[in-house]
Amino acid sequence: MARERIVSTAQVNPEEDKSQLSLRPKLLSEYIGQNELCDKLKVALDAARGRGEAVEHILFYGPPGLGKTTLAHIISNEMNSKLVATAGPALQKTGDLMGILTNLNEGDILFIDEIHRLSATIEEFIYPAMEDYKVDFVVDKGAFAKVINVPLKRFTLIGATTRAGLLSAPLRDRFGLYYHIDFYTPEELCEIVVRSAKILKTDIDDAAAFTIAGRSRGTPRIANRLLRRVRDYADVKGDGDITLDLAERALEAEGIDKLGLDAFDRKLLSIIIKYYKGGPVGIEALAATLNEEVDTLVDMVEPYLLKIGFIQRTQRGRMASSSAIQHLGIAVANDDPQQKMF
Image (cartoon, rainbow, N blue to C red):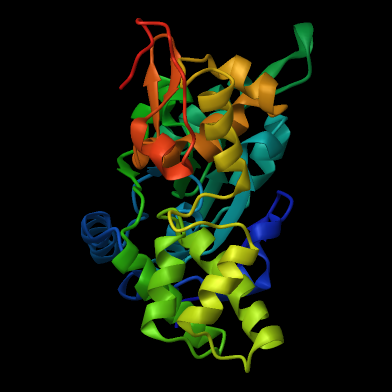
């Protein structure tokens, strides 16, 4: 049986509680979706296992909640190795990373979430570790300074990022394997919901599972979160079994509409349509109007709205599409001929 000992140097994400961890698939054969990625990854893992080597360094990039951390756990299980997990912002000093790297054994995996947020000093420090499996550690200062060359055992670095464009080219090029994780189809999410319901020992009918999947924004993490909220509703308002009617009422109570938009999504679109006459509007102005951070809008809100075509990015700013206006049922008056969309 594969052993998996997880060592974390970062704070636990509230989304990744014990319930969430229990829903994670353990092996590639249990993983649902991302079929092309899984096929390529299986080849790489089988080849490394056959040669008795550590798998090459891997970079996963894509929107949050699509399974980057889950895949790191799966690789650890498949390679029968220890997983050490940390995050880019948690690594502030070279000594922190030095301690982690020197404690890695042959074939162990170092998983760095939000790797695009590594400081320049840490990034430079990690280059020789990735390429030559050694680090140069400077001790003392001034005339007494000296460099100690510390050899490392061959390990695998798995990086995860939601913003691959912020990675420097030297760091990105040192990954032998890099995969983009895309949004899931409703059918794939339906399979995930049914599987998670079995793990949670909750009966759910197919129509209810598909309804939850269709409102999960193409994201497994959201699908599992909505499933737990619907399960709570079914336990309180019903007999515990999740039916279509109960699922729809629970999701309506949560403010999730048929396309998976929540109250904040609708607020953002409404502001573009009402305040800015459909756009264009700069992302900074939009963030200021919503009293939110720009990164929150770019990383968490926009990806799905862009995917379903409700927002368009232009050189002049963000614009709401005609389908977004129709979905919200808001009339927009736009007298500027340069901004007419319809």
